[in-house]
Structures are given as structure tokens and as C-alpha cells.
Amino acid sequence: MPTRHELFDAYELPGRAEPRMRMNFVSSADGAVTLGGQSGALGGATDRTLMQVLRAMADVVVVGAGTVRAEGYGGLQVDADHVDWRRAHGLVDQPALAVVSGGLHLEPDDSVFAEAAGRPLIVTTDAAAEARGGLFAAVAEVVGCGAEPLDLTAMLEVFARRGWNQVLCEGGPHLFGALLEAGLVDEVCLTLAPRFVAGEAGRIAQGAAESDRRFSLAGVVTDEDGFVFLRYSR
Image 1: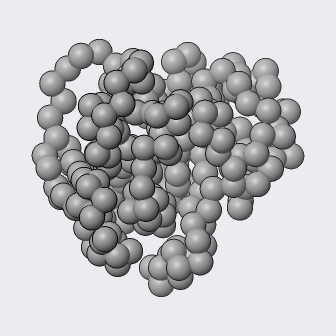
Image 2: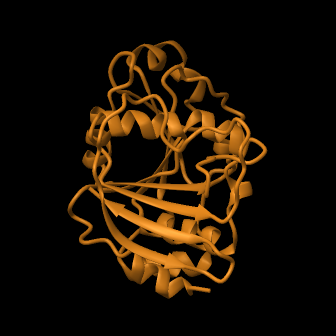
């Protein structure tokens, strides 16, 4: 099995000052993004370690509201070993968390807020921020980023003003599709699980128009359980 240190080396960032949007997804060998409705069911031990490594490298972790609900996101935080890595690299103990919800279809008592290690940021439309933003004053900061559909470039500008250059997005597929459509994805980290799921599960990117968006293969890692960890760069 690749060690945590080997994964840090394999996914090393070229430089923290240069903004980077990095996606992290797991998929079955036949392209299913979920098993039983959840992506976590497709993963394995190395995949879970890699998720911690990628989070440790990030300034902010971005996740769509649909994924928060489907995956049961609680308080997102890296473990003690990864806190040590962050401190050694001059970072605060935990990456920030940003939840993207165009219609602000969330509740203040959701576990993603109640169990948060820090105060999350909610990114939504201007209209939704005005209509429902006040409900979250005690648990999160709400930022409006344009009209419907949400302006993802404006979202990244908000991050940049806070010094959050290294952005890790954990989905879901519609958010990935929107970021692809906007040309904002720099890197895709894809775990390929040795499973064939069939059924009606979707793909890791949905909602974007068909287009030949070409990336180069930047790295390959495998483990003894048959998982393949692919790193693609634009």
C-alpha cells in the first residue's frame, strides 16, 4: 500500500501561490460515481488516506449542497498527523470549508455546520443570500456570487481575497460539470475502483455540454487492493 508520505510526494503541488482548482472523485471501473447512492461506498483504505492528504494540502475544501446531503457530511477536518504536516508548511490547522448551494437549500442545524471545526462559508446566489442568508448567521458566513446560475469565477475571486489559492472540490457531479463548463478545473484526481456497478448511477461530471476537454496524465499510483489513483492536469 502507498504510504501517506508517498501520497504527499505523488500529489505534490507545484507552488502554493499559483491558484489551483483540484477535483477529487472516485469511480467504479464502469464509470459509476456512487454505489447504493453514496460515493464513499466505492472507496478503500488508500482512497480514504488520499482524501486526507488532498485535504491537508488545500486552503479550502469545496463541496456542493447535494453531496453534503447525500454523503452525510459532518464536520470536515484532517486528523492529527495531517495537522502536523499543515503546521510544518505554515498553514492553519484545518482547511476552510465552503458549501455551494445555488438555492441555499440547507438548514442551520445540518451536521456540516453543527460539527464544523471552523466557521464554514456558504456560497450561493445574491438572491438566495438576501432571502435566506440571515438564517445562517450563527453557524456560517453566507456570500452571494451573482445571479442564477451561480458565478463560479466570482466564487474563486472570493477565495483569492482570503488567500485561499489551493482549492479542493469534492463534488458533486453537477458542481464538477459547472466548473468544467466554466473552464475552471486545473486538475482531476480520480480513484478508479476495481468494481463494476452497472445500475443507474451517474458519471463524475454531469450537466456540462459535450466537449473535448483535454487533460494530460500527471501521475499514476496503485495499491494491493486493485485501486488505481490517476492524476490529470489541464
